[in-house]
Image (cartoon, rainbow, N blue to C red; front, side, top):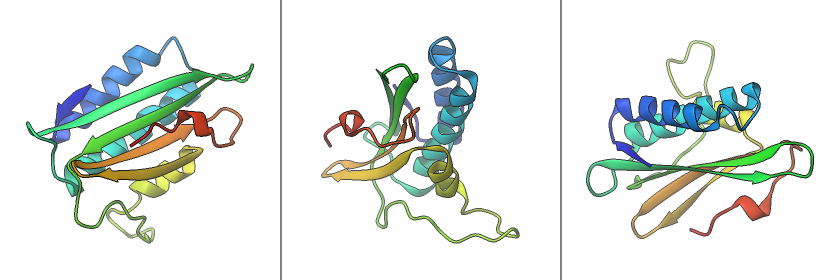
Length: 139
């Protein structure tokens, strides 16, 4: 799906993800997915350029795991930024800078892929807690 490169984009993406996956994944996983997607879209809006048309692309992919529930990959694609996503140190008094720490804490793993048009930030959620190479889409 595409959402506006605007603060409302995160809300639209959260609602669509929750609606589509509510009956597919456990509630605790859905809460983590919604939180991470909000962070990734919010970061794209705050720190990156939009894709052509003033949008951010949001996608998710599910794979069934062997008896332990679905593995999910979230992907947010934007027009890129000069520095790319960075985990910044934060203190209890910091106003911001916690977003990628939240992503790192909730997801099994996350990363960034860049191409000539922009960048995609992805986060994987594996019910076994181990990385799933088959979930990583080619950039």
